[in-house]
Image (cartoon, rainbow, N blue to C red):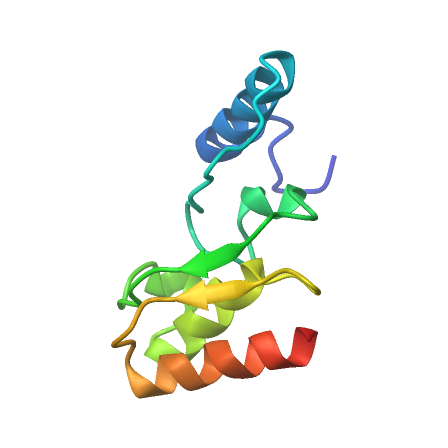
Length: 109
């Protein structure tokens, strides 16, 4: 193992693994997955071809990991965006965050 890295997944990662297994065994046709921490570091990134990706209202949260500004946080939240997958967000995002999300989506299209 890597030094300082647990062999067991964290709580959210474990829940994601269990949910994906249940979805597969239950033959779920469509599921809505909400990220836990943020796009870039989120375990939902194991889904390589989602139907759509969305970012809800940006706020200053998880600052120790995502950054201290709305733009930094938006950059990580936009980490869920995938090439050739539609991306959307809500109206009224802070301008700095909206600009970052738009740039990330454009870079993948």
